[in-house]
Amino acid sequence: MKKFQNITDKIAPSIIIAALLIIWQILSMVNIIPKFMLPSPFEVVKAFISDFPLLMEHTKITLIEAFLGLGLGIVLGFVVAVVMDRFEYAYKMIYPVLVITQTIPTVAIAPLLVLWLGYGILPKITLIVMTSFFPITIGLLDGFRSADKDMLNLLKTMGATPFQNFVHVKLPGSLGYFFAGLRISVSYSIIGAVVAEWLGGFSGLGVYMTRVRKSYSFDKMFAVIFLISAISLLLMYLVKKYRNGVWFGKSKFLNKKIQNKSEERYKK
Image (cartoon, rainbow, N blue to C red; front, side, top):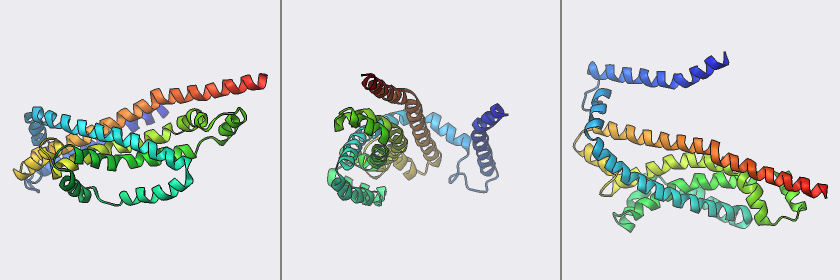
């Protein structure tokens, strides 16, 4: 019964997606909605195949921007989270500012960044950092503050320094929170890159969207929308797989190391 439930859980999303595509195709065939406004799935696939080489060129640019911004966002988020965890007054000063930055719509700040920083890669990276570092920061901060108190007390009796507490308890314990934030940030980084390109740039998926929209090629518009969604879902899936593998194995290793040291101490 459990095996059947697992199979059902896996195929249910595929069935729903297939049903939606069938309904979409039927609506296109009976002309309830004009084709230029809602092209059929078949036309979207044709547009994707015909523009595949061009889409891949634009995708490469968008991914480079997204990964650069995400990398800087991770570094910035880590530093800010460590500072807020270590110093309470820093938390009281920085946290409200972080919340305020998240109330500003991306499409509102993007034109200003283009105006201030030009049409190069800098405004795009800046926007991606602004959109992606917040989930990382909050995730890490929550992880640091939910560290195992018993483990921290044990290390304190062993004469551990604050840095050792951080490395052996807080950092491994925060990995789950970090990866939860990272799954959100990877999708934000793609969205941020596309929005920045949409409002100003020379290449990338956002630029491609602007061009096909102006030419009323809505089949190509739908194709790039689905491509962006597929990229975001793939990146989120890869983060989840990496989370379940390497880092949690390392976390268990560090906790085992602490346990062994504790046993050695009590034997003495």
